[in-house]
Image 1: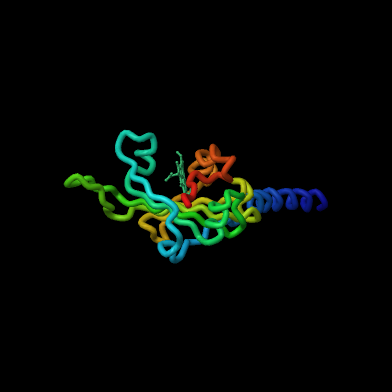
Image 2: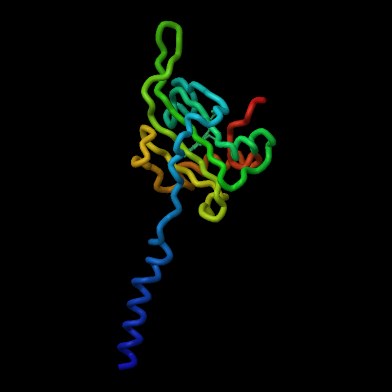
Amino acid sequence: MKKIHWIAGVLIAAILVPGLLFGKSKAQVAYPEGYQSWTRVKSMIILEGHVHFNAFGGFHHVYANDKALESLKNRKPFAKGSVLVFELFESIVENNAITEGPRQVIGVMEKDPNRFTGTKGWGFEDFKLADPNQRSVTNMRDQCFSCHESQKANDYVFSTYRK
Ligand code: HEC
C-alpha cells in the first residue's frame, strides 16, 4: 500500500511541478492606452536597403510616457512604470515626398523589474495594427531583447531625447 502511495505521489508531482514551473501565467505588457498623446521622442523613415528594413521598414515614431521621458531627459535608468512605444506606419514615397501610409504595428516596452525578470526588467510586446487583442510576441528574449541588449549602457533603449 505504501508503495502505491509513493508512486501516486511521484505521478502527481510529475504532473504538477512542470505546470508550476512552466505553465504559470507569463507577465504581459499592458496595452499603452492613449500613447498618441504622450511625448513624441523621435521619428525615422527606414527605406529598402537599411539593415532593419525587413524587420521594421516604414515610417515610425517613438513615444514616451512621463516616467520614461524623465529618464530620457536625465539620461538615467528607467523607473518602474516607464513605457516606450514604437509606432510603425507604411511609408509612401510619392511626388518627391514621404508620407505615412496605414498603421502596421506598435512595439511596446514597459519597465517592471518585478514582472519581467528574464529581460532586465523590460517587458516587450507587439500589437498588430495597434489592436489590443493582436499580441504577437511569444518570446521577449529572442524576438526583442536579443537586439535591445546591445543598448545596455542606455538601459536597453536606443532612442535618445533631443532637448
Ligand atoms: C534587430 C534589432 C531589433 C529588434 C529585434 C527589436 N528592436 Fe526595438 N528597436 C530597435 C532599434 C534600432 C530601435 C531604435 C529606432 C530609432 O532609432 O528610431 C528600436 C526601438 C524600439 C522602441 C522605442 C524605444 C527605443 O529603444 O528606442 C521600442 C518600444 C521597441 N523598439 C520595441 C521592440 C519590441 C517590442 C521588439 C520585439 C517585438 C523589438 N523592439 C525588437 C531594434 C530592434
